[in-house]
Every structure is written in structure tokens, then in C-alpha cells.
Length: 597
Image (cartoon, rainbow, N blue to C red; front, side, top):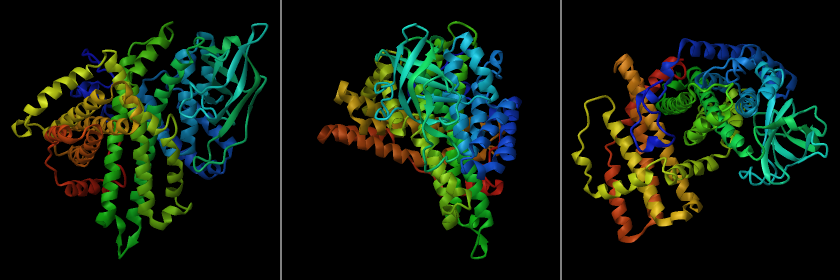
């Protein structure tokens, strides 16, 4: 671990990213690579042969496969060794999660079980709770579920919680009444993390077993995709939950819910990137096999550009996910899972990077959506029939923009958390905005001297994009002050700018590390991807910035602001078509995503 201070969550907007605090897949240890290979082998050897059974809702097969995954240790990477797990770093967990992204419905069951279903006990359970529930979770013999969502509550899951808990007369049980909906693993889970308000007020969490009196599941939901996963309501009718099954502390359920959702978000992002890479592989294989006009369609520029863009997005998605997970690993370094303050340290460490976790979720799920859509398109009519996997990939992917908080909620969270940190003095965002407003008219892009190093121009433009975010956000804050939170259209565009900045910089740092390690010739793919991606992103950021400023101001004030944004985002485009041709050559030659773990 570096001796330098770990960057704060959201601080990437204010300072250039440092390579030593940006973990990249090329830095995997031998153990990471072994874990990845073990997971991929399990999916290819055990899950893929059962795809048809899984799709037909053969839940017995799914539970059998989960237990088999547990035997290999794939469900216990986050569980401490003292409680039957492997106690590995977050990089290892992300590696497993990404590989499970190849597996569709099983990925959903695995993610809900190992993430939001088990991590509340890992982080917030007492010794007795951990000893009782974690070994069976790591082994996969007892599946876990997370019960937060309710009918009518939607995105306001905490404020809208109507499930109630009351202490029994003898003081031995909490009596739960309510109904949770859309619960992943709801039909087969043995253990539920359930949120309820004690006496209608104190939002709290409980560990509930299926066998406890008053606990039942509703019918399986008929879903568009992820058909092999279990999704049901979970019903509590005078359910008797022992008082010792209160998780953490009374009234602190929001700490558990928010912290665990952050974990769920970066894990979902990792799984989505795994699915996107698999969609690219399937699309590339089909394009090389499919003949038209006497040639494989992978020879045609229109198809090659699709493959290139899919690979570019996969690269950026990988870079974003592992940068975030590396930061969380650094923040958790040295935390003792057996210590009394472990829950507090975990809360602090993971909540610190809630902005980055939200970015992971939005970016990863939208990369997946893009890739499965293009996978169908490359297949043409065959992509629309269930004989080919492209059809199922397309259906399965759609839920990820809704899981773990909709992408709209996560987009609003990103600028909202930055502003909260700024108001608390944790991020000098306001000061940076004030300084930029003073400097902007003196700034001239023609006077900038760039260092003689690879990707220097791209690095410069990424820093200018950061300034554009600060410029736009600062203007919006001055205009709306405390009412800014109601301007969702404005905040969504700011979020999109922030997401692109984080993605571009993550990819840039990774490329520079590759160039330093391999030389420019051997790292050409990295440089080409970053150059092409930045070239595509700058016009989007420019458009979002102008839309925001045009909403905030008008007349002479607006014209002055637009002069400022033109200075910041003055950009000389590159030959993007040629770059994507070169990227496509690598993809087609490899038969999928060119970078291997």
C-alpha cells in the first residue's frame, strides 16, 4: 500500500489521478489470475451445459450449482477465514464477480447471495451471528436474500418502508409484519436480511430464517429476462424473529442498507462488464463465421466498427471497476474482521467511495446494454430468435439498469454526494469553482505547453473536462443554491459529465501503465482505445455543458459562460475511424476482447 494519502471519494474531479492509487487488471497477482481461471472453468464446465435447464426455471439445478460454487470457494471470497470463507481482498471478489457475469441468471443469484445477502452479516453481524450464518453462506448450502424493496416505496425504500417490527410481550422476539417485493433469491433463500421499522419509527435490520414462524414466499414473478433466477415477494405475518437476530443496532438499518448497496453497485458493474465481454466474444465469433457476398461479415467496415466500439467500452468498464475496487481495498487495508469497530471502519471506507460505486453501476450496466444490443444487431435476424444466445443476452441485460437503485437514482446520487462532501468541507469543490471562475477569462488554450510523453494531449483534455464540470456545477450552485436538488435534469447531465471524466481518466492511467511496462509498440491497443474514446467523449461533454449553461443563464451572461466553456473544451479531433480500424483488427484477430487476465 502506498504511503501517500489515498484520494478521497470524488476527489478525482479536483486533482489529476495518480497511477499508484489506480489499480489496473494488468497488476493482478498470480492468485487473482488463478481465481479468475477457476471461476471461468466452473462456468464453462458446469453452468453452460445447464443453460437450458436454468432458463426453464429448474431451481433445483440452480441450487445445486450454487453449492458446487461454494465447494470451490467462489462464494466465500468476502467471508473471513474464521467463519468458513477465504477472506480475500476486494480485487479477488471483483474477479469472481466479473467471471460470473458470463452466466446470466446464475450471476444474479450469485451476486445477490454473496453481496447484499451476505455482506450485512460480514460487516455488521456480531460474533455469534457470524459463526451461525457465514459458514453455510460461504459453502452455498444456505442461500441468502436482501429484503428492502416494498410496493409503493420504489426508490424511497427507507422512507417508504412500511414493514413493522414490535417487541413481543415476553421480550424474546420481534414480531414482523409486512411484505417485500421483487426479492432476488426470494423463492429458495434460507436466510433473509429484512428491513423494518421498530414501533413504526426506528429503521432496523434483522436476520430472518425461512423456517421461522410467519415467514413465507409468494409466487415466482414472470420476468422478461433472468428467467432462471428466483424473484418473489417475501411475506411476514406475525413472523417471530429472536431478539438476538437484530442486526447491528436498533435504528441503524440505514447504515447497513446504504453501505451494502454501494458494495452491490460495484459488484453489479463488475458482473456487467463480464457479460459485455462475453457478448463481444459471441458477436465476434458469429461475424467471423457468417458469410455474405463470399466473405465473412467481420471483413466489412460497418461490422468491424461495432466490434471496435464494444471493445473500447469493455476496456473503459474494466478500468473504472478495478480503479474503484482498488481504492476500497486500500481504504480497508489493515481492518481486523474480528475487531469490535470493524463495522464502523467498513462503513467509513466503503461510504467514502459511494460516488465511484454509483459510477461503476451506471457505466457497467450501460456498457452491457450497448454490447448486447450490438450483439443482436451483428447477428441480424438470427439475433432475434432464441436459438442463438444473443436473444437471451439482450433480455437478461435489461434489468441491470434497474437493480441496486435505478440508473436515474444513481445519476442523481453522484453530484448529490459531491455537493454533500463540499458542504462538509471534505472536498474543496466550492473553492475550486471560485478560482476557476476567476481564471477562466485569462486562460488561453493556445498557450498550453504539453509534456513530451504518451497520451499527453488526452491527459490535458481530461483535466479540461474536469474544469468544465466544476465550471458548470459552480454556475448551477450560484443560480439555484439550496434548490439545486430539485433540478434533476441539470444534475443528470452533470452526472454524465462526471461519469465520462472518471472513465476517461481510469482508462488513461491504465494505458500509461501499460506503455511504461511494455513500451509504446506493445501497448498500442491501450493507447488507441484511450485516444479514440476521448475523441468520442469530448463532444458529448461539450454538448452537456452547453445544455446546462443554456438552462441556467441567458442573454449576455450566457454568452460569457459559453466563451468560457469553449476555451476549456477547445479540441482538435483525431482520426477516430483509423483508430477504430486498428482496434477492430485486434478484436477480430483475437476472436473477442483482446486483453486477457
